[in-house]
Length: 192
Image (cartoon, rainbow, N blue to C red; front, side, top):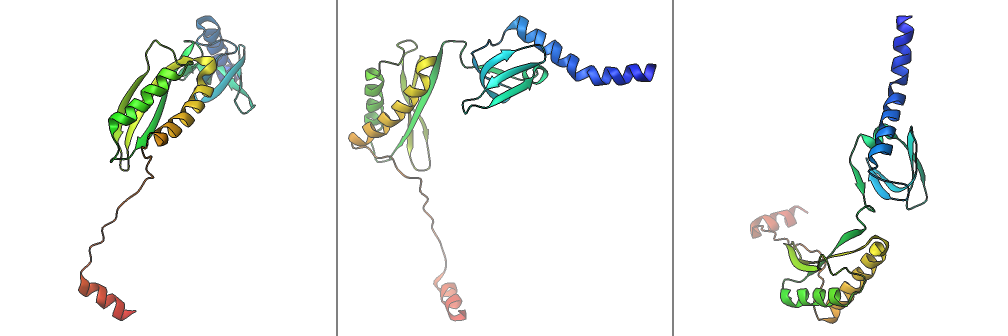
């Protein structure tokens, strides 16, 4: 009888864990149906929350049923809850280009884009000195419904505007210096 009870207890352990996690999700509500979330690596829109599983629909149309224990047991990123999202548009300009000119182009784009929120105000900055470019960034906020289309449109506008301003977006490049004595180069050629 004791062994049977132990076997049943072990078999129900995960089920009971999922039920407990489901209750926590329903009470604390870190997300609701319709929210776009990343729950322990599962990214998609929440279609259903029940005691055992949470159902997601991904951007590419997949149906994912994730056990509540897994959803509750990890980080939950809710992209919908705050109503707005920040975008970071980064572009590299040549070391020979004027940083101030590049920042001016990004400021003009931000000022002319109606989908960007005035608060928090858009910012432009130098984010890093890369191997092949000086990376400048436009950081701005928009409402959730406009986020992806704004990101795509701004990336296009930034590239075109940087080039129209006479600035260069350099290709990644490396310079190799090969040092070899002339004598060893002649010896190698004789052996061939």
